[in-house]
Amino acid sequence: MDKRNIMDTLPWSRPVQFETDVGSHRVLVSTEEAFHYLLNNWPSIPRPRFFDAKRACLDVLAGTGEPEDARTAFIAVCEEAHVHVTQ
Image (cartoon, rainbow, N blue to C red; front, top):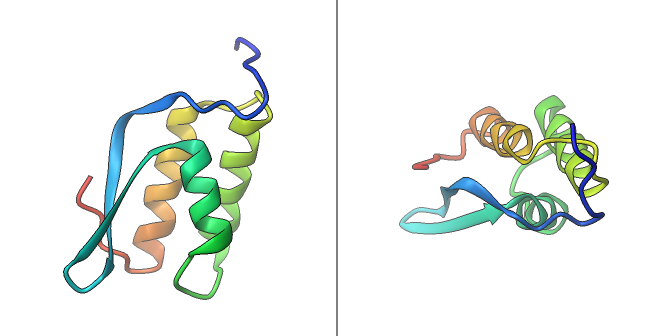
């Protein structure tokens, strides 16, 4: 695995669109955006996949993880919290 720069902001292969409220959606395109959303806007009580998603994001931002793993983990935490994802 290649070491990337700290705070890798490369976009994901595909954005993730999810419902924030009834009729309202948000689109995230990178690990950095997902990490900030988890820290500042996550709408439910943190459960196990929340911590997995934060860890996956931190790994990418530290240059040791893969952006697609963070994207997958973000989708998983949405599903765990019953947040509708429309990818």
